[in-house]
Structures are given as structure tokens and as C-alpha cells.
Length: 198
Image 1 (tube, rainbow, N blue to C red):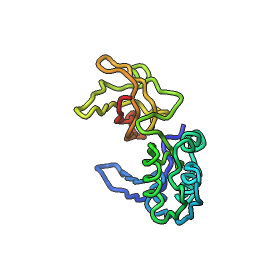
Image 2 (cartoon, rainbow, N blue to C red):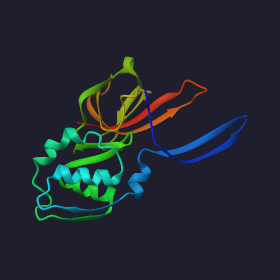
Image 3 (spheres, helix red, strand yellow):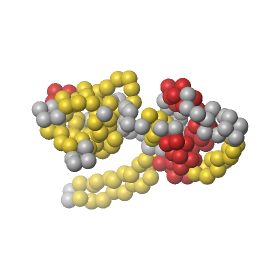
């Protein structure tokens, strides 16, 4: 299964003892996020889903799960009843539009992931317990952020719904952040997760 796909940003190799270590920095849609511009006219009364789709196209990423959210977007009052012009950073404009509609967005595998605020990507969930990949004991900080470590499970990514079962903690959590680490010369293949309870 594919864990990550992105655009190479920087790479350098350094000597560490008898090893040559190559460090790579890459971003999933980072170039489009930072550089894409939008300059489009919005027709009077344009449906919200159509406006979002036009900005996503200008952003230069895939439409992702937009089709599954179109009905929810179209059901909200039109943001542009009198029409207008959208001009500027495509990512900033998309953020303002979807936040006004009660959504949030991110780029996952080069495509849009659009979610209602504080809701996970559905409809399936990943069961996380000691015999399905959970490493050690998860913990929750004073802000309610769950931190946990798992084996390298491709189904775990930001926005994903986790069903956690552990000795001290259990419940449904939405993944907010993943840090993947792997070593081709060892057995370390882990994901460090931050998640919020839902």
C-alpha cells in the first residue's frame, strides 16, 4: 500500500559514522498550496459547491471527496448571492470559503479532503488496539489531544476515524496529525499520531 506521495523539496546526504544518511523533505501538494493563484468571476447566486470546485481546480489538486460533500455544500445559503470576483492565493480563499460554510480542508494524496468541522472521514473506521498495531500506551494531554504510536498502517491518515481500545483509554477519535518513521535497515516502521475525541 502507498504511504505517501508528494513533491521532492530538498535532499542531502551526510556521513554518520560508517553510514551514509540521506535526508529528504517532501510535501503533499505543498507547491500548489503555496503558489497557486485564483482569479475567477462568480456568477450571481452561484451554488457554493460550484464555487468551491472552481477554486479547487485553480489550486491544481484533485477534487478528492468533493462529490460526497456537494449536497451538504449546496444545502447552505449561497455565499455569493450578488456574484463577485475571487482573486488571490487559492489556498487562502478556499480556507475562507469552506470555514464560512462550516467545513475544513486539507490535501491528502494530492487531492482535496473536505470535512465538516470536527467530523471524521467516513464511513469506515480503523480499530486500534494492541493486536491490531497499537504500540505501548496512548495518552491524552490537558487539551484533550490523544498521542499514540502504531505500526505502519496505511489506513491511518489525517481525518481518519479511529476506534481506540486500550487498558486506560477507549473511544472514537479523529486523526489530526501523523508522523511516519521508517528504517530500511531495521524494524522501526511506526506512525506517531495526534487525535481528538469525537
